[in-house]
Amino acid sequence: MIRLHHIAQARSFRVLWFLHEAGLSHEVVRHSIFDKAIRSPDFLALSPAGRVPAVELDGQTLFESGAILELLTETRAPHLGAAPGDADRARYLEWLHFAETIGAHLANLTQQHIILREDHMRSPTVMRLEAKRLEKCLLAAAQARQGAGVLGRFSTADIALGYGLLIGAKFLRYADPALLAWQADLLARPALQAALAEDGVAEIYTRDFYEAPDG
Ligand SMILES: N[C@@H](CCC(=O)N[C@@H](CS)C(=O)NCC(=O)O)C(=O)O
Image: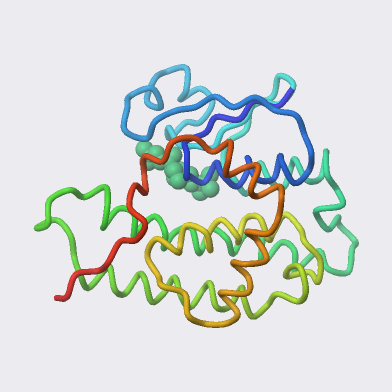
């Protein structure tokens, strides 16, 4: 049994998308980013900083999306990974974990545009800087793709990175052909469409786009 603790549009979407790509049956426990349930002792026992994703796997619990993806790939969908000894193991790990470099910029942009509610708390300079740094990272990943993914085939690394591209579209207007082609390839995947259908009601990114103010 795989039980995923999830907030719509959050990093837990990576795991939800993976579960669909791998064809694994699962249960989703939905949380809200704005209520106190993720601060409850029960949830903190699963994820000590009160973050999603967390998963329950046959009696074991695990938090941190990269670790969850790595373990589930190794144990349940090895065709989506690169095992120790595989020629593309190093490249797989670097891109899988680079997804969290992208995630840090997304988190900063989300904080600036959405979590900080008062204008005086926000910095247009930080918003523009973070958007530029996000774009640079996404371009690096887009240019590393060969065919269906960064390993020359679709892998779990492409799920972790692809989440960054999907949410990045809330802060960047993609014009580069490599970003547009990547986005189109991902959106054509039935598993991504199935995961989007299961994601739940948007509560973090309720607008199509978040513009950085002039400043
Ligand atoms: N590096 C972690 C980040 C987890 C994380 O920060 N998740 C956010 C949603 S994207 C969260 O749970 N935020 C709730 C909070 O900060 O209170 C991962 O990839 O799992």
